[in-house]
Image 1: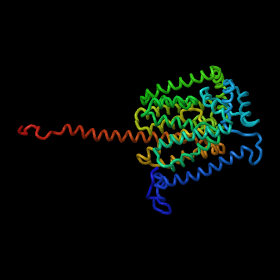
Image 2: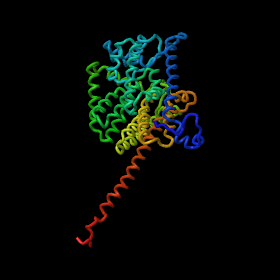
Image 3: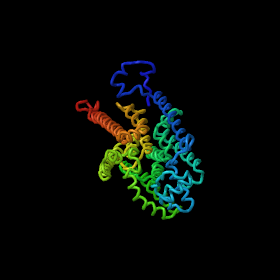
Image 4: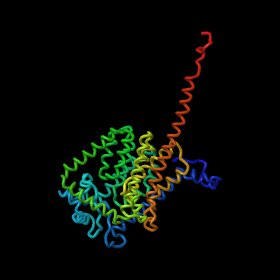
Length: 441
């Protein structure tokens, strides 16, 4: 973010008591963002250390024992290595493998991923459980930091403090999830789509381990005419699906398709905490709507968001505005995205910060971005305590900011075209000296 030099520490100016202090937020400058995020990161690291110690019985034995979602990945990998990959979709066998990897009596962690994800789970299961967990989270975090730095076009190292302190990073590591990998792949796609479209398409194809989160991207690619990336993504999906069949056979695919029917019941009945949803579907369910009504609302929102994202990608050539629109739109276009999936919102936040560093912040944009940044910290507890679905507000706000920026750029471009077009047309209509009638030539 830009430094606002007019507001220095220990100085009081009329801006603090005026409206510009809110809608321009000059006090929310780079130094403060880095300082406050460093404090937040310290608290998160302390909380993470406490949770690790607590779950391993450092204070008192936990009954029943607890674990993370990574146990599901690791157990599926173990079953694949044992030559029984289809058992990853047998809840009894899969639960037994989870307990063998962690502790007897843990709560079952579902595995609703397609068999392509076993291509990653199986190598991870070659290591001991804790070593595999650390390797996976450290590698995906490093990947995410590399992508974030490229999006921000940042130098030095202080930029990584706000990126690391983003609360969805804490949730992803604490819950043992793969959201940093998802955000990294999506962020890389938005980075490379113009310069290396085939590579971007192949990376998009890798997102087929969470296919619902990749459904909006082909709409954007088609609207923007990125056909090389579109084709590469299709080939990438076909290749990775084919590789999974070669490695594990067709049995896991049959088992996976059968398990999907049960997955819908799990997500509809509240087996997954409604406060953890970050989608319109989850918000509707939390507010008391029936699953049928919630799906109907989600369908309307999905169609509207797809149209908006297609419009942005068709009309706007700026990668920052397109990337922000796509990332925010993904979270609004699907019924299932959970708290850790707000890592995808970080892609939108970073692109909007990149746009602001180039074009300056819009009114209220700093505060809105700060609100979205802190959303993963509070939305679950507010949802649990008060039944208020705050989480979907973050992608709504981010998509709205991308739209406003895109409309603003389109308006400015039309004004410039009118001005310079008028000058060019007027210049052509001016009489050329020495060539007018009666000039004597």
